[in-house]
Length: 221
Image (cartoon, rainbow, N blue to C red; front, side, top):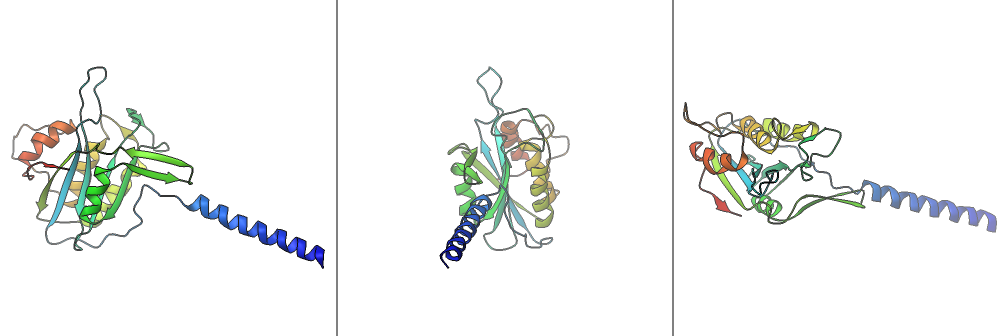
């Protein structure tokens, strides 16, 4: 009887430890929002660009190209999707099987502001903390109301970003913002014909080009 109780206790203890370890390994905050967007296709929407002036430093010159992130509203009241391609380690080219530090979330407008304003950390397997951006890295934002809205398309583009290579010239934080917004409303970034605009450097795009695209004035975060 004592032998049976002994092995019974061993089995119970092993089962308990297995459950605990499994739970710890699965306790991972993904860089993705586990959500399904509301259907959208009619009515107006709203998009906002978040700007980090000290992103993407020039090599050896002390200047910065700047960095941008995206957000767009859902058809539901005070519901937003938002994210960015951070490339936190600053590599010029990052393959898809590596970490390009792209993320997306959903929440209220206050959640949007809080996430961009404060440090963003994702916890992987409880032992690895990946910093995606530091506190006060983003300092400004500007928004625009849109005539149309396609939440599903923009949501999918935001998700697909995390499954692609990063290239600082052709596939970067700015091109990703542009892709998300164009999917949301293909006229959201339209500027006057023959206008001389910068669509390559984030700081110039945020401070100047968005003026011609009828974005609202810059707001401090």
